[in-house]
Length: 325
Length: 219
Figure 1 (cartoon, rainbow over the protein chains, first blue to last red):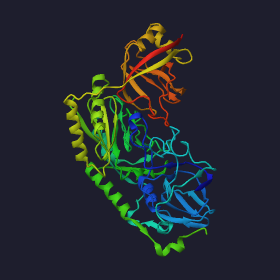
Figure 2 (figure 1 turned 90 degrees about the vertical axis):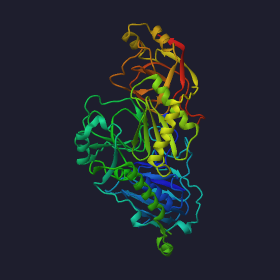
Figure 3 (figure 1 turned 180 degrees about the vertical axis):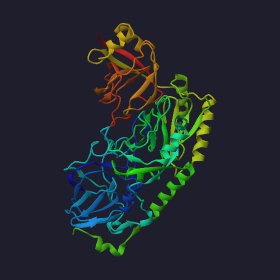
Figure 4 (figure 1 turned 180 degrees about the horizontal axis):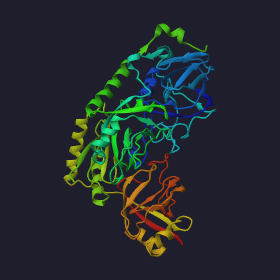
């Protein structure tokens, strides 16, 4: 059980996402950085898509009522448990009554805190993910507030086994302030033409302040579309890059609409979407690079495999890692 | 137009059957959707029908791009063989005009007809739920009689009450939850369109047939 003592920003409960309801207009939601989210769960001994807390801006202080095992992964936060610094991509036994501090740092956006046993909230439409705009899922469909209590499910593994795990260096994502992000061209490539595609691939695009869990707006050379700028609405996938009439692309993120009518120049591949998600609005720039579906799927499978293989237990360091007691 | 398969990133395929708003074309989309849903294969996450296309989300850890494309082509071929589905029919009682339909008078004046005529035209035929989206449970329905087709508001309302029935171009729709909105509001229904705790949570599904019934007219 985790009590929220201070909640100074954007934090929600997310699981692997909501599927089967997009046909009714319900977005998938789920984590902005799937790999960090799954890593946190695996470090905490949970199945990879178990509900965890996503932090995406602002500072937080949490206090467990009883001893528990937590794991943190992602970017954008400096962590400490009581007075000890705690590095992400690892798990740790936290004593009841100690405090977990998450301070937003200047680099990256999203971090995940997984609790051994998972965060126990009522599933809505089959998922524990929060959909803020729909006001459902997670904790009453809203952000974490001070005074909230996060209950955990029953851990499947003994604390001894999971309390000092870490993710091998080579399995961690390589975040950057100006990442190169692979995309697959289309579907409305004919709306743009080869010159516009060249512009899109040759120039950096800065992540705008007008970015959130629904979409990342980008600023850069205009991607003008000749003629009509709207088409008959069709289904939208996370990662799709829509270009409205102003020529400034918007990348669809976890809470994006399920359908839309703007032409799409390309789609960010699953393996690289977390690199974009972790960019800081107003500062970081992205370079896009074209790839093939086959290569993108191979990259995704490699990342999932590396994550699975990368969890290492550090039994010897166990006593050193126990903090707060 | 010959059906087109387009990769949307590495985990979705867009199956385009056409590119316009056309009831017969949309019907084929729903038939294709029903085929996907009839025997769900491992790796098929979900399908999302739209006006003229079906978006097929799949798990790239289970299905390769080639396997997903093959599956889509098999289902497309089955639509051509003339599979049919029987749509559900749903009756929707509406209070037209007054505080429930603040734009009813505008729609009537726009077409130089009376508000009574707007109501009888709106309730005269059955509509198809072409697709759903905008907010959870919002049905895009058509096709409206030409004498009702009205452009959206220039400036959308900040707050539209759940149950409001609106018109946008040749489409009609119902707001499932309180939200902003730019459609011309002609009435309101008391039927709940979305309740996450209910089973089923949504009143409508894509492909349903909808008949509006006038409960009252507050002119």
